[in-house]
Length: 282
Image (cartoon, rainbow, N blue to C red):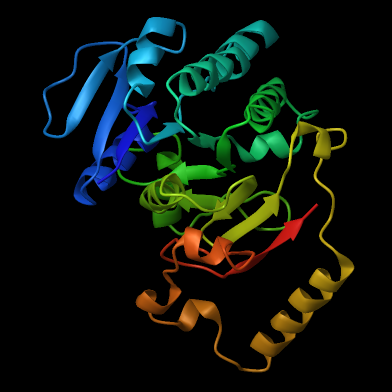
């Protein structure tokens, strides 16, 4: 049994994660702004990312911190900085003070291109805080998240039901189902994949080793090694030649714990679907 401290636990992703954690036998300490109904094995901690006392109580006695909370909408740059960068600084400080080493940070795919939006800039700034924290961290950059209870993607799925799909140029959309994301976060809380930035979607997980914020240049990650690109190209050719792809394998063959794979230098996909992906050390 592991004690998990969770921010954003009352939100879409956080509530799914808590349900999965309880089902797996863990206990949860969850931050909340308002009173919540009592729940077995859940301790609700009143507070927010702006209340140091609340964050201190949240982290106390935890084995790992999963930081999901953040700001998606803000009126200006200062609002995004306050919610995402300063909020992460506060949670990291509370984690260190409590003596907790394991820190799982939920970022965003937008952090890959921080110059494209203020939101992406703020999420990249939060990543830099975590990278330089000295904690045993792993980071996840989810794309759009969908699933039961989601309202953001609902209209797109309603249209798809009527055989109308609105896609960006190129005809591809990166998404992940909320329970798959929750399972990934739960696996990372148990250890492994330290110092890695994971970019999961319903096609798989790509992981990159990141030592510190100084390893990135201009907010962009370097491209994989040429030999890795060649390996991927050959793999695609093999699949086209009729060899069985990962998607055709039974589910139990595809579920590999992240911590087991990390020991072999590979970011295996702990999700229910998709391909495995090698880790690229920058």
